[in-house]
Image 1: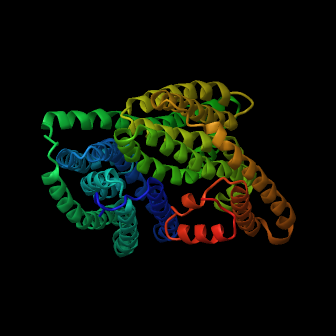
Image 2: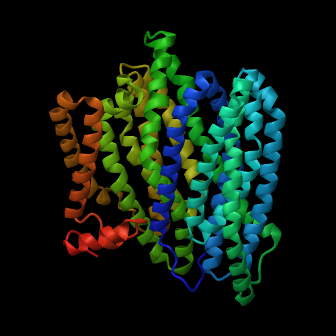
Length: 535
């Protein structure tokens, strides 16, 4: 645990840790789905999947905003030396999340049967929905603790608890799924879903053990803080809800944009003459294949935003100039990751679609969606800056504007000759509008632009060269090695080419490279000796 006498982790190091833990969890979860599908079959997986959307929506509404509010407010109070108030914020948030989590868990358990019968229209889903309900309470407790550590800008507990949670979840998923399969597919699905509960228990135990050291530090610093009169419960709750409510509302808008596609795209495609089956297939290529791929590169951005909110809050108190430096650094490294990802996905759209889904048709919406990776990442980064500055209401308003524009363009463009590409383009424009509004507001509040275009030059130049190298690799090797192996080799060559060009063009310094966990310091030291990086 960190304290005032020890150097805080860089917020970028925290971002890399969170990105690595999130990537590990996602990859492990994706890999686990393959044998799970073989074990339970499509019906079992269908029952398994029916429980999660409802659970995810309730979880986002009850925890997301308060988690970020805790991290922001704790960082702000600690920066002012108000440890007693910071501790009170955490305690009140924990009580609030306990109530919300417990209420949500009971509500989901009580509504499990009506939901299975009337919403998902498969009574067999009842046990799976019931099995996942206790996780709402447990994850709510974890959200409060993670918010505390994030506010202290120590991202290790959050990162490691995610890893522990996912490992235990996967073990339970297979163990109970296999053990209960002879008793029926509905019971096997419920056992697999129960992994969310055991995983949450494991993650919570880990966080509680880490919290014990934090509690001691808080008590020591609270006794030493003479200029912290504390705040009333009413004032603390007002501060928490002021930050949390807009963020919770924002968590609804992204699913709302997906709902727009579900409601509009198939019908507009049918108006072009597609059959119901064809329209559904095209919609599946967009929503089930292309969309998940464009969200993969933003794993780093997601980690960055969690780390950036408390970093900006602290900087706003201690030194406003730090806000500009940290936001610009975050923007630059964010573009360094996501611009080449967008270019690489566009160049290899068909090969990746075939490799992952055995569906070349998914390449069309994927190509049109790839610019959205950059806009989405900028939107997320600038939104985190606004949240750190205490203006969490602005990203919500901007998301609503973007959703409205997306709805209009989806209606207009999907019914034209663009077809499914029109729906993808509408999404990209929505992301672009959101990113512009967020960056403009951030520039207005900080007094300096995020310099998005300026920071795009090096990654764009290196990315184009990388794209050419990837394309040539594909042309030369495809007929000899086949699409699958060629795609893997092309991705590897693309990473090497891009990394080398970024170093040669001075896109990253040695100090920044050293922030990458595990290998960063060694790589930075080696490249400094070779004269390939500065700083």
